[in-house]
Amino acid sequence: MRLSQLSQAAGLSPTTVKWYLRIGLLPRGEATAANQARYDDTHLHRLRLIRALVEVGGLSTDAVRDVLAAVDDPRRPVGEVFAVARRAGAVDSPAPPQQASDLGDAFIEHRGWKVDPESPARRDLAAVLNALATLQPPAGSEVPAPAVSDVESVCTLLDPYADAVEPLAADEIAHTPVDLSRDLLTERVVAGTVLMERAMAALRRLAQEHHAARRFPS
Image 1: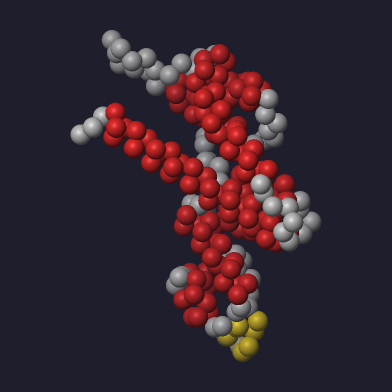
Image 2: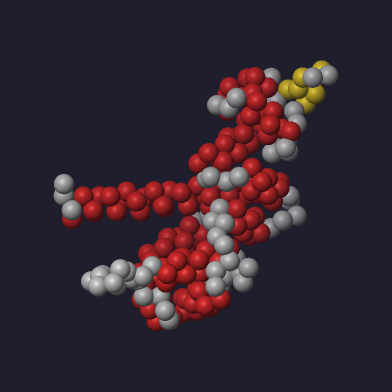
């Protein structure tokens, strides 16, 4: 198919497709003339993956480039591709104070989780704990700010969330198919990691809206 047909099938403008070609997200097609090329279903599949990661997953083109480079490198184990996808979807949080980092690390140790010391999720958790610690209520408020001043208070706050997500995470990993080709398996891992992160956040907001409507009827 020609580039115009490829862009139409992918639901993208020709300008966007040309941009993805120029920055290396999309492989070049088979040259048929000086300024023309032929594309096939592999290009369409890749474009749909790029579109999902950018438009739904919220990744930058630089992050998508890193993820696709890992997917396309047969020397990289699937576990490493999984780590790249997790890093790509992490929030770009500023470096939190050491106290918040120590509390986050202590909570991870409390849960018995094996986590890379350089995992961006560690920084994200510490950034949240630091933000919560700064939320001081107005003088005379009857509702105290979330207590995150020591390990015990952090565990009290976060254990219910960890209890909810750990079985889900374990089930996701346990049911990741291992009999697929590496190409399909790594794409499944990437798409599941990035897109289902958005799905989980959306489901939580939907559930909150439902229960808020029941408790605080208008």
